Length: 57
Image 1 (tube, rainbow, N blue to C red):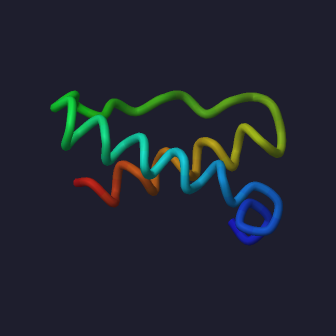
Image 2 (tube, helix red, strand yellow):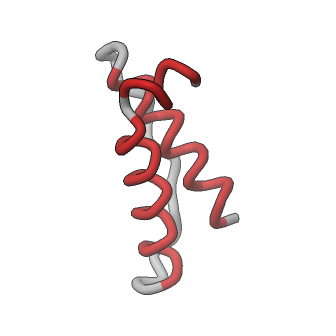
Image 3 (cartoon, helix red, strand yellow):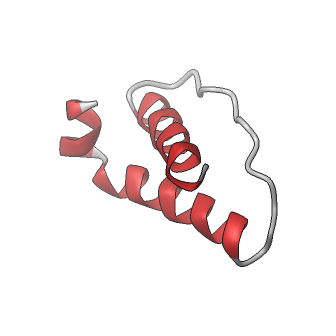
């Protein structure tokens, strides 16, 4: 997680913001996406998505 914050802060922010917009503005249910196989970006994206889901649930 610290690695993601240090090297991919925009990934976490973007995922959380996208989740909020999808739920509030478009009324689209947030669904779990599979974690990417690429590292490290994929893990950071997956973590960001999970945090986004938690933020809007």
